[in-house]
Image (tube, rainbow over all chains, first blue to last red; front, side, top):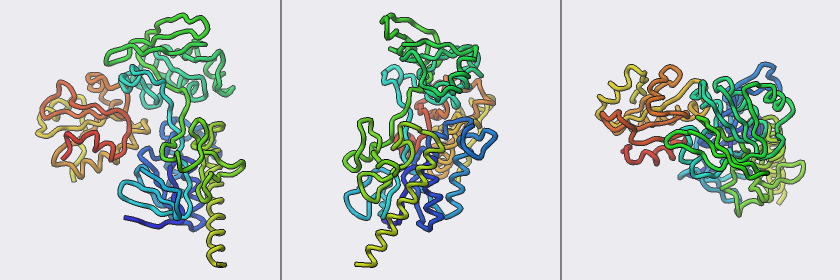
Length: 314
Length: 111
């Protein structure tokens, strides 16, 4: 099946859904390819305390369901599957979802980012059996057990703090001697008696057969190795952009993020816009993603108006 | 339309042991975002493939001993049991997946 749309939005986190709300209110009748992981990273977030308009914490899934509903109210349509392929070399642009082909006058990409892994074979073998990337999902299984978490950013501190609700002790393993996390998250973690820090330390291996028994650590300064007995290892070492569809189609930076023009969501292809974490490795907040989603929808609208104007005058 | 069977620690052995089809058990909890993502996919699976596979779910909050017995340490975890065989799962899938991916992973069980 092939259908022609004014705007196709790929991705359904705060960026994609805000773009959908603006585009739908502007009568652009957007279709959102919301993906298998619909709702994006906030679906894995427990309490969101810093989204404007919510003085009481709102859960990530609840916030995303409200955003989805809001765009739907103005007529946004959803396709709950991943986009498999894109073609930005001809117009209208092509976006494929299984056997369905969408032809779009403008495309907004908001595919976000995903958790980075350490890349150890033992980590992969024990994923779901003691190795986890989702503290809010799996913390429950570690009641009265010792845990380790690797990472030094806001999400690592948030997850470490959350995990102390269950665990006897949470050891934060961080490869540097200071945290990247914001001041408030650091202070919370430092004040928590159940959280310990191992600075300048990396994880060499996850030990265990069928379940996690320990992690092997080494000190990046002295080279000294040690073993830390834990029942679980949580990974929170940052993110990689979801841009597997776009090499050769759009200009990406060295880390794979889509390059956008300054103060704009315009990509290297006119008519293709990018919003949210897929083009932002600096702020990576729900509210900045939503803001750039709004920008993308407004820029797409202007682009489509200019196209229509050009067509009418030639 | 096939219903998704709600299992408990008490009914697990009887239900899996008495099934004439493979059973997929979704280990889930209310507070788990990815579990909510996969739930509608499993409902579709239950509707469309009821001939070849039964779909069941087990709330790990309410039924911790079954989760422990199969060493489920992450949710959602999907375990597939062969008919009557509760000793060990025939297949283990961890994390939320889309329908296409899930059907591919379950190809040996789903007609």
